[in-house]
Length: 214
Ligand code: FDM
Image (tube, rainbow, N blue to C red; front, side, top):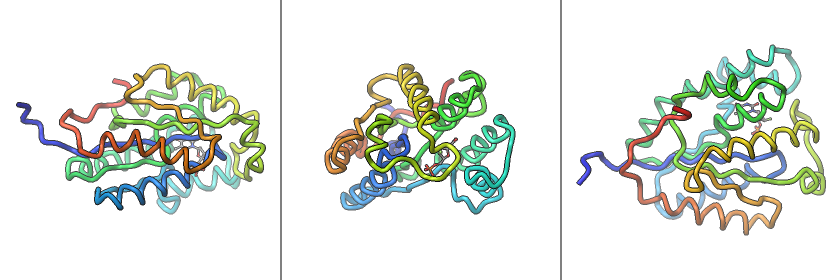
């Protein structure tokens, strides 16, 4: 018998703009709570009111300019700020659900023209999600939902590139750790899929937390 204590699951939800990610994350949180499973929701970029968060927020609203590499490193630093608390929460039995994680970091910066390897490196060794659910939507479906918003990356050409990189990243993971969900369907159907994957992990895991891209 393993003497590694059970821990809770680390789940990342990634998604394209207009994929309904925010709604799905909220629905998942409600469902976990209803099942009596302790859950902590984290959103990256985290809390746009911290020093790093403010710089990221101002950049995303196009109120400031930053070198592509500098903003990439800020997004990564924003995750490292939280890495230790993610580990503590999991060890204490709290399921952690992240709204975006390192995969967004790589997808958006690579879409801007930086190399994928370079983009991955500052996030190497972060806690690795046990499961990543990628909410996929085609640019056409996004357009039919009213198009994109005002922020820096909410443009069709950018979203197409981001989607391509997400698909490239997904090919490096096993089907058990990365699931692409067609988010162009009704929100209840998407929520059902999300729940069916997450519920498999709600009993906790006895395997140690892995490190990203090690
Ligand atoms: N984003 C998010 C990045 O470019 N890099 C990252 O590491 C992360 C976590 O920030 F356009 C981008 C992706 C998106 C924006 O959007 C945050 P939401 O809609 O608040 O998730």
